[in-house]
Amino acid sequence: MIGTELTASFINKEQHAYSFQTVVTVRVKEKIPLLSITYPGDHKLNRIQRREYVRVETTLDVAVHPLENEFLPFKAVTTDISAGGAALLIPKSTILNQGQEVVVWFSLPFHDEEIDYIKVRGKILRFIQVENERFYKVPLQFFNIDELTRQKLIRFCFQQQIIMRRKGLMAE
Image 1 (cartoon, rainbow, N blue to C red):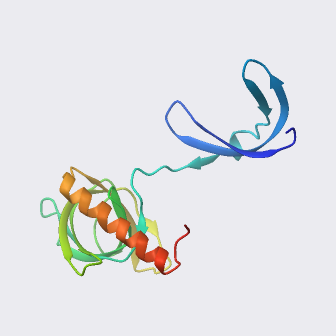
Image 2 (image 1 turned 120 degrees about the vertical axis):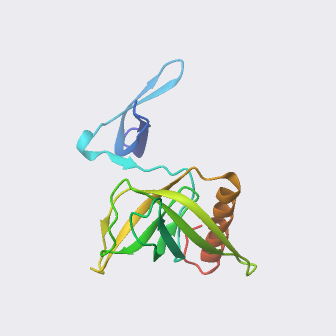
């Protein structure tokens, strides 16, 4: 009906998804029904981030290693993880660079008390300030990951979702 408020979304030619709030202004009866809606302007667009894999918030111990002795290996923890990447909390004293590739060892504790250890290559995407001034949050994108390792990550994330739903920490 005219005056109905909607959320509209679209994908541009660069394949980025956006949404915006709008209102139906006109209904047209053609071969197919058409609606005319308002456009609030580019400044009111909300970019929608679409992930290939589900990301879950979890704290895991990890060991970060260099590819070629650029730094000494160190321990860190995750803030979240998916089959495509993870975010780590690392000490600010660690010397890493945006775009740098690293090797990360994860220990994945499964519900059946089995622990899987996996090794993945990751690329540092950026450094994010956090409340604790001694650490950065560092998102990593995994690459060259074999299918067995990816399946272990998907299984782990799925089990974490089930646990969080049971505890009431996640929306249905």
